[in-house]
Image (tube, rainbow, N blue to C red; front, top):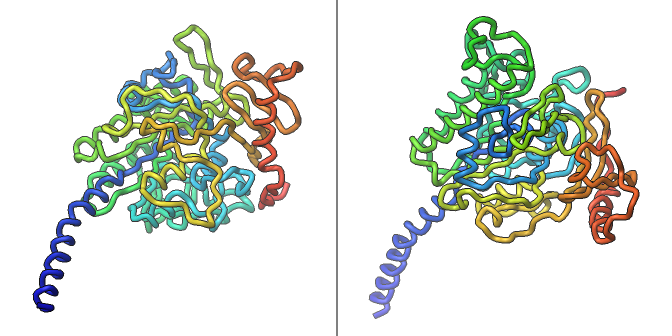
Length: 438
């Protein structure tokens, strides 16, 4: 009798194991691939879907129509500060040491997704190892930042990113690719990566080179065949439109490989548009880019999320999103948890993607100390309407987007208290010491 019970028990256990296999497979399938595309020097105003009239962006406009468009996403005003913040989920007040550098030892979204079982890759612009003077080689290389492989410009040198680009591939010195266009090389790598057979989900980070200066004709512009190295801000339009074309090709590649519905694709800009660029808007106004500066047109960037079947098509979200919010969102998408000792300053917006309330921020804190160029450092907290600087200045950014006139009348006490509380949260955080001496 005991033997019979033992056999029955074994059979039931075996059956349970087999029955659980589809459940486990389904759970693995439920963890989506994640692609983060970040354009370089592209402000909110540049996309047609955001009211821009100067550039044709059909792929991104369609992506927004099929997904969720965020209207209040704010980056850091400059490239490296944004990259450090989005990759680590931390305010620059905690870990920004120098331009062109990610401090060694920082845990990034790639580390956390790899720990959760994801394959990880990065293509495009790095700018985090340090290239000039005292900062050279004192930052972080791609493999040390949690990526399994890479195809990158500006790892150990910063020669051309466009025509005849100098690109570093995993395990090889940077190679100058004569006759090639850098963004096309990155696209080829990404297309091949997406098409691989694998038994795990993937995370692909694509910090684009486009449409950052030098403003040169793209291969779709007739001047490219005549003088591809000619510089003129008039070519910004062709660069934006080529950027849009590349995004469209990535989405098409996902469809071709049958992975479109199980891939979350996010598109953002890293900071505002170059100050030399003016963009016409459909309402008749004009927006001047303010990259490097803390006013809204220096931080307000486009953000679109597409995940067919999960994110409602045509949704528009007006909640405040900061760059520290992406890392916890990715961890939630991976059905994982943040390490207990992790310091993360953002909140996951995954609930909002699913149409739920979530825990949106009622104020964004920004610490900005560029440590490069002649840009002015700033520390402020903001909501949709008001921005409070740590020196006491407060602006109504809806009425005064260029911040020309600080308010002299009292703002609502609740607003003042909320913004001051956001500033006070980081009052005791000591900024990391510089590496480069003045």
